[in-house]
Image 1 (cartoon, one colour):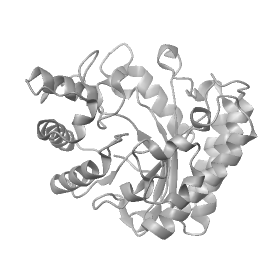
Image 2 (cartoon, helix red, strand yellow):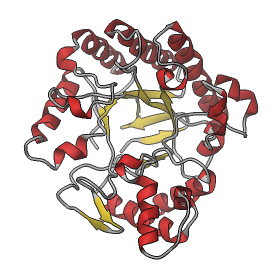
Image 3 (cartoon, helix red, strand yellow):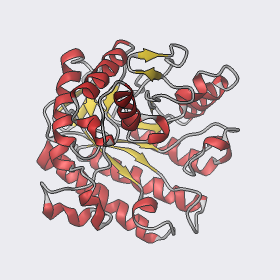
Length: 343
């Protein structure tokens, strides 16, 4: 098992660095026999370029191909891949829990009742318990926002009470909040400090093993590709690496990063440069024993499922330059870690 030792991950007595990818769609394609081969295709390409960690979701509450059809009622055919609860209404998440609560007669008025109402928290704990029994590699709470701190503390404690072996993280974007006003200068915009998350305070909660950060300058700053993106990546990553080192004493993983083809002035060359900078910052930290513990590209895609592409899809078969960059990073990572992680 991967464990945390100070500001680093350790596997088999050696430092372990994540070099991986996101595949939010894994569960959706897994349930359909006609698309299941796409999963094998994606993992084969990922393995060929040396990627060792895949991050996916195990939440899809109500609706099409739902994992959890109603509180505590699951479709075992969908239970082929696993993850956690989201803020994204498209996949159910907290809004679906509130809907279920109202169907049970609770008379709830806000999606944020998910974080405070005892019945909804009990629904969530039951979901966590079932997922744990199917085994996961890390727990990712995935984007909860206001009423967050008490919810993080309660749920992290609960997860650790039923599963002390796996690592737990919050899944926030990394925005600085009220606990560190002096760090808000690194946020991508002024609204970031008001969304309800607080990078330092959230990750100081007991039971949270490592910090997470996302990197989406095209969503947060401007959808026009420019060197501003690259400048932001440098300061954003370094501030979080420094804080994980000095304030948290925990690893930090850049769990989502990418550039969308929908951005104005997008080019594959620019995306490659963007990826390279993220990788370089991780390696610079690794070479000095710092807290950056890896990165997960958003996101790898197989060919032929363009209808599910959010704009950030990287199809390795069609992007040899990007494949070469990822492969080179994988080789560098091996200098600091053992060959692979399965989980």
